[in-house]
Amino acid sequence: MLKFLKKMMLGLSLLTVVGAAHAETADQFIKTMSDQVLAAIRSNPGLKNGSPSAISTYVDGNIMPHVNFRSMVSRVVGPAWNKASAAEQNELMVESRRYLVRTYAGGFKGASINSIDVYPANGNEVRTRINTSSGAKMVTYRLENNGGWKVNDLSVAGVWLVQSYAGQFRPIVAKGGVPALISYLKSK
Image (tube, rainbow, N blue to C red):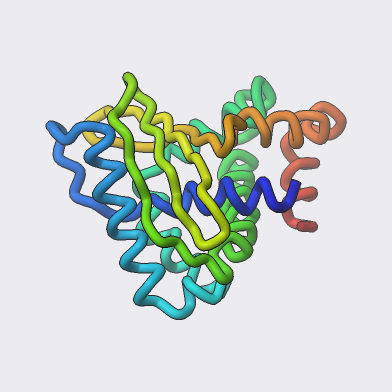
């Protein structure tokens, strides 16, 4: 499961700040972002070595602006999201982000990405192939465009992030609500 999460986070890590023009297609958006992430990984020793602080800084400034994270977290939690207070929702967003960054650290460590192939969009989905020294990894992005492209889910080898995390976290939420999930994420 940890290897799967690392691959998924590597897929998410392919998002970076790009001035996404409204007329830009989904696949152009992912291609530009992929090129910039490759350059960042190659030029930043902290990213290459999996430094949590370097990854956290990079994620905050370059990835999160292009992810509809609130939507992703609310879909992971399900109906309990609407029952949570605004403070609980905000704390869950913070802890979910920390959880992802810790996973990113493992995904970046020793990452030797040779190239990224971006395939033409199929509706709001863009498939990519990340070519690494240890083989190819297929990552598919689901995007939305409400004044600019944002990722609202991604898949590694056919397993979607939101669905995977929902399966992992909803039993925790069912037993103790959003506060139980916050506690769980803090312990990881």
